[in-house]
Amino acid sequence: MSSIRDDYIAPWWTYWLHNFPHVNLNFQPIDNTFTPQDQNYQQSLIFLGCVAAAGLGLNLLCLAIYLSCLCCCRKDEEEESKRPNSCCVTWSAVVAGLISCAAVGVGFYGNSETNDGVYQLTYSLYNANHTLGGVDNLVTNTMGSMESGLKQHLARLDEIFATRGDYVQTLRFMQQMADNVIKQLLGLPDWDTAKVDLAAIADQTAYVEYYRWLTYLLLLILDLVICLAACLGLAKQSRWLLTTMMVFGVLTLILSWASLGVDLATAVGTSDFCVIPDKFIMNQTKDLISSDIVHYYLYCSQTLPNPFQQSLTIFQRSLTTMQIQIQGLLQFAVPLFPTAERDLLGIQHLLNSSEASLHQLTALLDCRGLNKDYLDALIGVCYDGVEGLLYLCLFSILAICAFCAMLCAIPRAWTHIASRERDYDDIDEEDPFNPQARRMTTHNPNHATNVHSFCSYSSSMGSQSSLHPPAAQAGSNAPVSEYMNQSALFGGNQRYENVPLIGRGSPPPSYSPSMRATYLSMTEDQIRHFGNDFQA
Image (cartoon, rainbow, N blue to C red; front, side, top):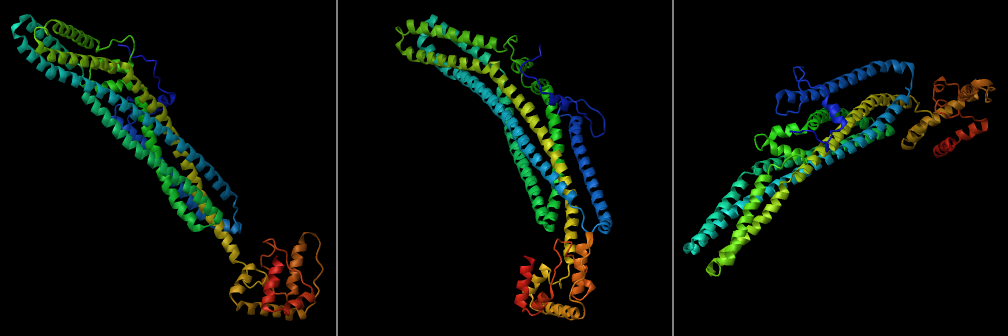
């Protein structure tokens, strides 16, 4: 019996996955033949999920070590630099965003491909179920008409033709032909059992696939939302948003590893089936249908004999013989027995219906229809389905890399944000040229007294010293010298020398004696207006 086929060739990625090591939970290698009922084979697929779980544990351990080292080294970084370098945080966020976008795109494509493959599988199963159901209905209806309808007509004709022995002998011969037809129909396989199994498999597969597709769609949307929210938190420097996204990032990291394990185990198991699908089908149907019939439908070769050809031929010959007998009785018996015409026409109509059923049955039992459904199901599962699972595995890997980069960047972003807040808090709130101080003066009238006291103190101290600032030094120390001169001009109070005016890009103020006198004579509103104009 030939088992070589040219109409289906398993894709290369199924062979690659089929050659994956198959190891049970006792670390013993097993055969990679697709036998889902075998306990060792089930353990080999579970082992792949355990490998993904081990990868998750190692990943979380590495992240924990990284965060611990980051917390321990934070004090050293603060001593070395007052403001940490944000370049690493920026590039980590950019890389995480790009990888996350690529992962979401790959995930959408893989989810769509897998859904298309499973849809093609269920569509083919429903078509095959419809074909087998049609065969079963035709056989049942034909047998019913032969056993009940024909029997009733022959019984009435036997009473009518009781006086004619030759006509009665013809009726006996027709009854033998009808029994022969019923015998041939009973010789056909019981398609009802196979039909129920295909329908149940198709319904269960469609149910599982719907929730699988929906779950991955929600996971893809969750990944995209977390990525966008993390980028928004970095842009707005929102620590609570970054904290929330870090928690969701860890959760999504766990889900990505879980999906990787499930997809990998499913892809390997499906590839084991796709490499040798015929063997599994024949093993599953050996107790239901003859192996010759299954082989006929799986390969559908012109060299293979049709296992139903003999039964269908006997069926056709029996119907033809019965029709010839009915034509003879209509021609010769009806003139003698007019009451027999009704039953003879009824038998003729029944034979015509049976002949139409025979033609439909012959078309449905032909191997080309079921073989096409079988090949479509294989192509849907082994090409689109397994390819989609591989893309989903790639999506999980990219998502893991993206969220690892994000989880590494968020703690450094915290450090950067905290450092900026400390630098902002170091600014003297009593500095009249500090924008924050002016905003506080607007909302706090009592602060105006501090401004006047400062100006008065500076004025009194300035009256004791020269009103002309020292000459500015040449070279790179000019801005610092000018700033120090302004400090001496305003009374020499050393606590204002550390105000980070130069560090934030603002030049130190320069005043002439007339401007000082004008400033001391201003009201509170004029002081605020002058400060705003000076800042502008």
